[in-house]
Image (tube, rainbow, N blue to C red; front, side, top):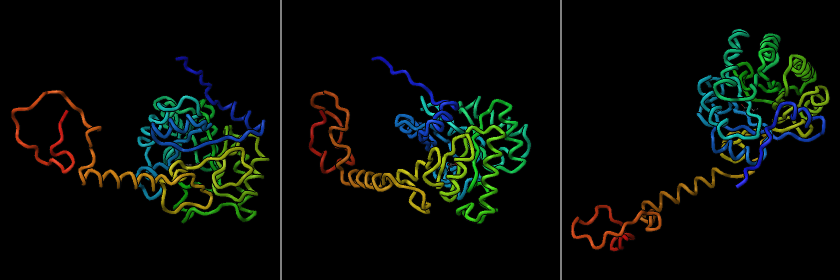
Length: 297
Ligand code: KIV
């Protein structure tokens, strides 16, 4: 069989998509099978988001997520992906102390895990300096403004950002600065559509919206939200494209019922040998209604 050549999605190609007005499709993924599905279905960017803390690891927010956890999941995703650009999210407190420490941490995602870029939340002056240092160290950076979930303790709740003009102007300024410092793209999270549109027009790099309306250059959603595995506290901007929790629950219930009733495993799901008539042995304990008396081969 001839293997089809896969052309990896690169950072210059993302920029070209913006210029051509071609929408960019992004999704989060945290493990091998879901990353493979995301890649096979043509996602341009796969973000190993620190949202994994909440959707996969069961933390209350993203703050406890560690570098080691992020590296572990990024490696699994990278092993599955052939085409998409894999971006690793820098977890809380991995980029706050100094540029040197940030470069050291970010470089682990590139060298040890095989990610192509990192994402950093925020656009404060200190954050901008760190981003500049990363770019200088050949580590591509995706910015992230609007709702920055790592600021949850300051914000008090996950809510719309930039709804008043003063706050909106700060977010626009932050986005412009991120572009100036060398970010290749910016995530805009939970801002009014009007603000998403202004920023998308203002910056030359692709904007990737999540709850930022229709006019961003691309969209991203959290994998588990989109497929219906997140069952509580879904934000307004999430569209559920499937109800996997319902499907999985039903499958598990069917499995449990069949085991209890002796329906599973049936003969088709068992291995068989041809030993002829056995002259020894006692009746098997746990023989079920359905298998008792049946031939074993
Ligand atoms: O961690 C994450 O999944 C993210 C996306 C919401 C953009 O940052």
